[in-house]
Amino acid sequence: MKLLALVGSKRHGNSIFSSKYIAKKIGAELEIVNLANSKIEPCKACYACIFGEECKIDDDVYEILGKIEESDAILVSSPVYWLDATGKVKLFLDRCFMAYPYLEKFKDKKGAVVYFYGFEELRGWASTTYNVLLRCMGIEPLIVAPIHSPLPGEIFEKVEILDKVAEALESGERYVFNGQCPVCLSESFRYTSAFECAICGSKLNEKLEVVERGERLSYEWMLKHYEELKHFKEKYLQKRGELKKLVEEYVGEGN
Ligand SMILES: Cc1cc2nc3c(=O)[nH]c(=O)nc-3n(C[C@H](O)[C@H](O)[C@H](O)COP(=O)(O)O)c2cc1C
Image (tube, rainbow, N blue to C red; front, side, top):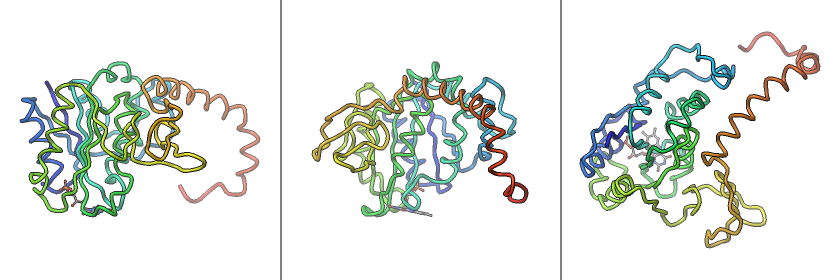
């Protein structure tokens, strides 16, 4: 198995060590792409890639998508920074409209997330961002594994969690940790009259049992969503005159 680890930490620490441990455990050929060291520019929101045109930005995103295409399994192995995913991972995620033409090729790849954090009370929502990173490329994660490991190397005191990630990647079987949405493995919820999963939109009771299943950000949903985005251009062209009048006074400096 060819395993590609998408890492988002400059430190030679838990994200890199975990990728190596997991690859060794399953006997996979490992390639690490450290997004923290990659050239990734912000998305310009031109939507060209949604219409099948090439992205004009000259950076590493196509090369990374090519590496994903060549791999059998994708492991997102990355820490929590200020309750969220690390910056370059989010930059890469923002560019992932570019994954649209690859969706069909990516959908059967195995995916997993392992993330690291220093404080139980500051785990935040990074796992949601890392989960969405796989989903926007059409890959449904088999496991989203949290590891409390403030210091580099402390993951080796919790190898049982890394072993679960390895097992999921090897067997293709899903694993749901306590506190995760049973449908999509999200750890973020919104509460109105029931818990609503922030990723898939499933309605859940207080034991996180599914009351009404949601499909948001599943592979089929992603396909429809990217199609829907195409209509934004038509909508904009129809409304352009009206919007131009509204913004007239505010155009100029700032870009
Ligand atoms: C800038 C920065 C911000 C961090 N923010 C958080 C945080 O919000 N919550 C948390 O639990 N840990 C936080 N940490 C701790 C890291 O998540 C933790 O040390 C992790 O093991 C780092 O992974 P690495 O060894 O792969 O770099 C932060 C660390 C740094 C350097």
